[in-house]
Image (cartoon, rainbow, N blue to C red; front, side, top):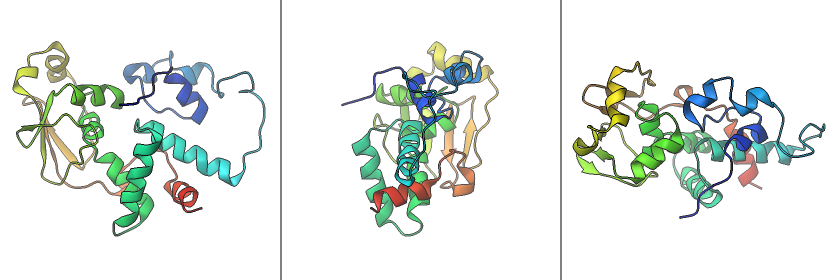
Length: 206
């Protein structure tokens, strides 16, 4: 499967926002955006006027990179969101939030969405007792996501039991059992992703 393999810090600089793609490094002075708060490339520091289309494109790119999706994956998710009842932009964000890899990240089992996607791919998690290794798997209200019994002895998950984890109010986590439950689907107010979703809808509506 195709994936982005270039330096991820360039993506944060290009979007002018922290996408939290490198875990703890994003919170430290080593963050590339803290050190060079301008787009990468030789023309990064030049002043440019952005058109309406440019603003819409940047919001789409930001959301896509925030959740770690490639173009086709993101567009397909938008098409599904468009078919659901409700506001398309909010549907899109809710679908992105309820991907298994993002839910694992929100529950504090991974330090970044990239790490969460890798852990899911490697089969470290179960959903309602069954192993699921598809990062795009969409979780539902009442689902229980747990670290597999065989994986709980690894240093990565052992150290989680000694950490303070803050989770959004649409999930609950029992860190001692290394499992969490989806209490409800997130609302737009629950989603802190800095994206103006209406601009994405405008872009795809052209």
